[in-house]
Each structure stands twice: as structure tokens, then as C-alpha cells.
Image (cartoon, rainbow, N blue to C red; front, side, top):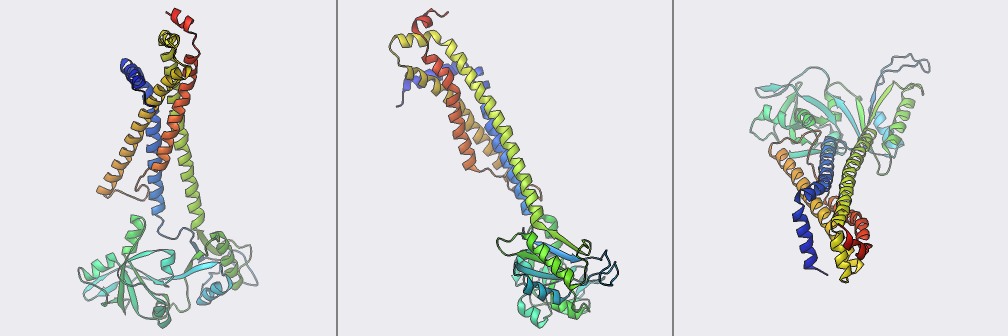
Length: 415
């Protein structure tokens, strides 16, 4: 039940000892403030790093290198050439592979031309499955499809920089560009997703069907490397090992030759980064909780001082018939008010600061590869505040119990 007299007494006590109350409350305020800011900054760091992953987070890359161990009469130092037959073998023998995107690079020095304009760009031979490995945003037109692969069509999907350099403000879809003397019809414009560096690279990229690249540029039956994504629930490590084992068997590579085939497991790297984020969050909680506990201990100590200062007053109350609970509730309420108000101010201030940082980052386009969209999980923050209020009540429980056990006769003699 709301007791206006008790709240009036609490207000009078706080007003009488402003500095003492403010210093006590600051410890609690700073703990909640630090918790919100550290968690928000940690989330911003995580969003920035995770956002820089512009490929599927369980992607596996496998490429060919040179053998280091002689095998079956073959000398060391052989370069392992991947072929279209390897693509078929992987698809038929390893069902754990959900997406397989063989890739080819255009070799040598060349320029891309359109009328009297020309420039150098990266040209890759791709399959439609590429977008399952590295999502792209189609600004206009379409990406490479299965008919392009099957019919070896001379079509191209260009990045935004390619469009700007070769076409200016004109719409390139349906127009033609010349790549090393071969004309390709532009069927789409794309831009990448991910970090600024990767997006800049994508902007200067041209995709053509892999089969067309093989036929038109004397790279028949050649694959430079594979990008793969496993089926749902299958660790990337599984397909990495199975694919390398299959390719080793097909190309007569010694089972112990670890140099012949190179690979990169994005899932392992991503899991390591996630572990780092868990450590950062754990550190944030430890620092913040330690600060909050120190603040609560300060509240408890102050309440002991309050009880000592008001010993005679409490004795008079008891002599006039005040119940132990009325004494306890008075002390507990004051403790809860101090911790609750200080915690709430810390929560609002910390949330406001994170929101301001987020606003400034977006306004100045300053979101980057390592920090983006800092945010605070309000559920966690409010839960922490509620726990803080409970801890504040517990901090006041010992002084309150001591006050309730005061002997009125002894209290009245207190000087």
C-alpha cells in the first residue's frame, strides 16, 4: 500500500544528505551505464565484423597447388589441374555438398571495350550457384542462369563501376561489350554485399558463364577452384575433407601430401570470431557487474550509517507502537529508491549514448568493416535493472533488520 508519509521521509533524508546520496548512487549509475555502453559497443563490433562476411558463413574453398611428394611414379612438383569432370564427380559422390560453384578467372592482360571507351576489369567465369556462396544485389536485369551455362551464351553481368566507366548514365542492359575481342550482351547489373573493400572489388567485376569462358578463351575443360556450401546441419569441415580426398584420388596425389590441395574453411574462421565476441561480452558483464556490486555495497554501508544516525528516532517509533515490518520497509524503500533511480538514469544515459553514436555513424556514412550499427538489447538491459533493484533491496535488508531489532529503551539513551 502506498504510504505518502514514508515517501516524504525518504525525500527528506535524501535532501538532507545530497552529496552522500549522490556519491552512493553514482556507483550504481556507473555500473549500469558501463554495462549498456560495453554491450552496445560489443554488438557494434560484432555487427561490423560479421557484416564484412560477404559470403556464406559455412563456405569452403578448394584450389590446386603443386605436389610435394612423389606418387605412383609421378614426380613431386606437379601442378594439379581441375576439370569439369571433377565438378561432376563431386556432385555425384558427395551428397553433403549443397552448393557447388566452380570458378574460372580470365588470364592475362586485356581491356574491356564499348564503342570508344575501354578499361581493365576482372572477368570471372561463374555458375548460377555462385549467388548461394556470395549473395549479390541485382540492380537491373538478371544473373547468369542454367541456359547460359548449357548453351555457352555470350552474356555478361557487370558491376556498378563497369557500368559507370563504359556506359555513363546509359542503361547497359541489352547492350554489348567486347572482352578480349569477343562480344558479350549485358544482361544484368549487380553490386556486392559486405565490406567497402569487397564492394569496391565487386564494382569492377564482370561475370560471364563459366562454360563460355572455357570455350571462348582457350581454357577448355579447366576449373581454377571450387567454392562450396554444405547441406544444412553438416559441418563445413566434413565436405572440406571429403572433397580433398576425392580430388586426391582422382589426380593421383599422395594421401600424406598436404601441400597439393589448398583450402579455406570460412566456418572455422567465423566460429573463432564468434568465440572472440563471447569473450568480449563476458568481459563486459564481469566489469559491469563488479562495478554494480561495488555500488550496491556502498548503498548497504550508507544505509547502516542512516540506521545509526536515526537510532533514537527508530526507538521512539517502536515505543509508540511501530511494528518491525514498518521499520524494515522504511529502510528497504530508501535503499530501493537509491538503486532504482540511479540504475534507471544509468540505463537511459547509456542507451542514449549508443543511439547517438549509431546516428552519427549513419549520418556520416562512417559504418565500416569493424564497427557498425551499435545496439543495446533492451530485454537484457531492463532485466539487469530489475536485478539491480532486487540487489538494492537485499543491500538494505541487513541495515533494516538491524533497525527492527533495536531495543527502544537502549535507543532512547543513544546520544
